[in-house]
Structures are given as structure tokens and as C-alpha cells.
Length: 108
Length: 89
Length: 174
Image 1 (cartoon, rainbow over the protein chains, first blue to last red):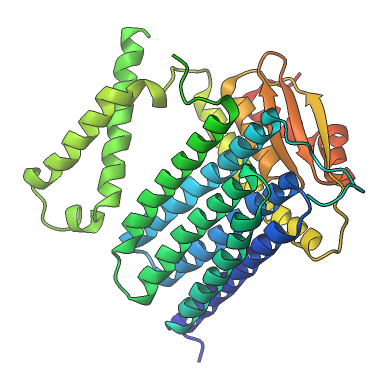
Image 2 (cartoon, each protein chain N blue to C red):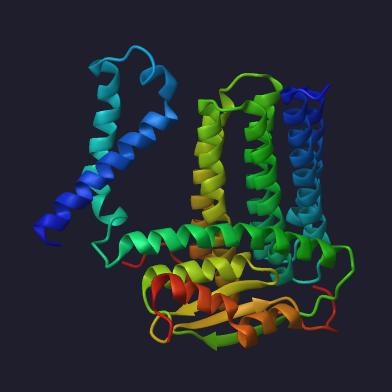
């Protein structure tokens, strides 16, 4: 009995699970990577995708309502603001003199 | 249909806990700024998921406002660390 | 700014601000049901305040062939969303140890000169697997980029697929 409700539920669960997996991967990368610049790689890319997947899953669950429009604005804003914040932090660190890590250095 | 949202909420709580380790022990200021950015964006997603758990639409507006404010805060701190002052006279 | 440009930018900013307010405050109650001027007056006042203070920021002047650029830019955004998914899978494989971590810093020059083209290219470098922009020099179009491995660094300097795509949108290929 494949009703439309069941299909919407399955799509929502798939998107939520994927988003949660990418978020936990981003946080584990934040702890595990050996240098500040590589940690910014982990959070700037994985966190953006995890957040977008979770909010798109929530949009599917709601249907076509005015809450969907507000969630779409959150997604569009974070798509442009996430990489900009990552770039701002990395530029500030580079010009203050934080040294990047090469393969074979001790972990910092 | 509330059980998946509660599970996602608990997983986001784990994410905030793991990145608070980097906030306490990160050597230097910039690791802590990156961890604060992560915790701020996870708070936005947690607000939206909480709005789905209690089945009221009130938290989505607060999430939109908080996204803009946390982004501006991160950019202001990065600009201050780069120049040593906030606006040149 | 000339007088014609000023009026055009003010009208466009007012329309965008008013539609944004209408979308955020229960549009199905206002458009599809009973509405009167008293409830819409709040939106008109807010849109007027936004227009008077910020109309120069949103519409910086008429360019040439704006519609063609907007259409190509929308297609480019679809390619960008595919690149975000690839980037996250790449980072996940480096977290779990399937690929090595060997970072380096590279510099290169491009032929893009306008503000919007430089910003779009810097954003898409950050969203591509393995690279983040550090610094831009607008005079010569020079980028300083931090790459996480040899593969993504080569895809940016040797292949130059992204420079050709962004130059194709803004018609500044050299």
C-alpha cells in the first residue's frame, strides 16, 4: 500500500539520516585533523552539506506551506554565508602569521 | 512521526559535545573561533528540528534571525583579529 | 548616479523588499483571503525605510546583457550544488583514512576583473573538493589558495575547468 504519505515519510527519513551522518563526520574531522587550516576544510564543507540536507528533509515533510518558504530562505542564506565566514577566518589566521602544517611535522 | 526528529536532535547534541572539546583544548584563539562558528550553526538546525518536535511553527523565525546574527558576529571577530582594531579613524 | 538609474534602483529595491515582507508574514492569509490597506500598510512602511536607506547597495547600475548573465548564472548554481556533494564526500573519505592529508599553499592568476566575477570564483573555489581561498588581489586577478592534497591542487591550476566556466558566464575569458 504505497500511498503518497508513505513516500514522503521515506524521503524525509533518508534526507535526515544523510544530513546527520555528514554533521557527525564534520565534528569528528574537527577533532582529528592535525592543523588549523585542515580543520577549517572539514567544518566549512561537511557542515554546510549536512545542514542543507536536514533542512531540505524538513521542507519535504511540511508540504507546500508558508513555512517551506522561510526554510528555503534559511537554506539560501547559509549557502552564500557559510563559505564566506570560512574564508574570513582563514584570511585572518594567515595574515596574523599562523604557520601551515607540512607532512612530517609534529601535530599542533 | 516524531521519532526520527528526536533521533536527529540527539545526534546534533552529540555534534555540539564533540566540538566543544576543541573549544576548550584548542591551542590558540583561532581554533576556538572555528569551534564557536560550528556550535552557532548547529544551534540553528537544532531550533528548526525542535520546532518540528513540538509541532508549532514559532521557532523558524527565530532560527532565521539567529543565522544572520551569528554570521555577522563571526565576520566581526575575524576582522578584529586581523587588524587589531575594528574601524580605522 | 544619473537620475534615471536612481529611480530604477529605488523602484526595484522597493518591489523586492515588499515581496520579501509579504512572503515572510503569512502570504496565504493576505493574498488568498480577506485583506485591506491597514494590514498591508505595515509592509509598505518597512519597504519604504529599506528603500530610502539602502537602494544603492542592491542595484549598482545597469550592466550590459544582464538577462543573459542571470540565465547562465542560474545554470552555474546547479553545477555548484553537485560540487558541494562531491566536496563533502571527499572530506569524509579523508576523515576516515581512505586518502592521505598532505596540505600545501598555491598561487595562480586568472583573467577575471570585475567584482562579481571575482567573488563568484572565490566562492566556488571554497565549495570545490579540497581547496579554500585565502586572498585575492583585484589588480591582476591573483588568487592564493590552500589545497589539501596534490589532486585538487592540480585540478585547479593545470585543468582550469572552473576558470573557463566562470569566464563564460561573465564573458571575460582571455
